[in-house]
Image (cartoon, rainbow, N blue to C red):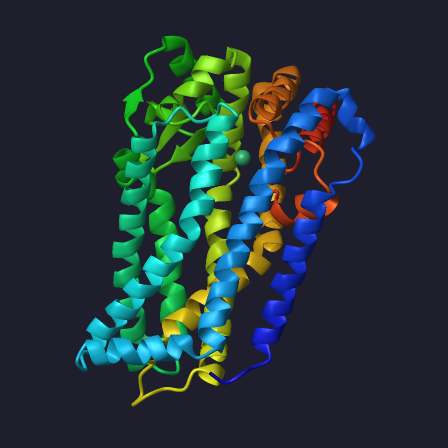
Length: 410
Ligand SMILES: [Zn+2]
């Protein structure tokens, strides 16, 4: 593989971010004084302990995948594996692609499994979050790995065919397909795939249904269904979300939310989710995703063209390893940008939700309870917050809710 300026830049950026991430995970620094207004020393300490390990596992998982793929690509192993899969497939291009894809999928699965198992099973049990049996965790893992295998294999075959047919413009097709995938994922996933993992039933409590209807009228958003999801099968964490399009528009409440939170806080959660919807955040998120996708695929096109030579007008199967490495590094280095946009939308949703309910106290208590029950790190180091927080930390959210409330009263 030839070297190109993009690789050193990506590797340096991802390397610097991961070192900073590791440093500030180990040494988070002092707790901002305003934290103590809303959280006890015990809560701050527990949140830090719980999250420290998760961050170490996250950065360990990223590091091991990145090092493995760098080694594969830059020592010629990927090229050798590529030649082997071409020989084994007996000259059938599609079969050689699938063979290479399968080998890499397996290797990455083995590499990722211990990190995934620890953070989503062992650690969650240790802290009393997970209610899942080992058998149920394994069955989830197999189903989602199977889904990734099938979708990934189809994606690779289509991608390489398109790359061969339109050598100068395939990246545009990739960006369009990827954008279409984002739309499918956000509108159809909750309707088609989520039921594979959970059961959804119409809310039985008339008080909950009328609360949702009251808010939906105020927000001017018709909701067709209020569904309760059996999240307690796996976790004690609480959440809610809006999903669907047109006739399938629905709000989904975790049963854990209804079980563990008082009505005024459930109302604050629903209002926050509705605010996302009413402010067009889902569409804005998709538009940003599509924009990012064009930039990403354009960059991938330039990177591949200048670093992987074509063979008989086609990319060899080994290019898949280069593509994966590219996406791994870019998505890691691009995390802060993505979270920057996400935090902006979360702030807006918090503000609009308070206008909708008129209940500042309920919204503040919700932030305190959510942080305490989920063991959020309420005093992250500024770098960690900038890099990995998709929502502003609890203290910033509370202060912003108080501000919005004060403005509404004036
Ligand atoms: Zn939100």
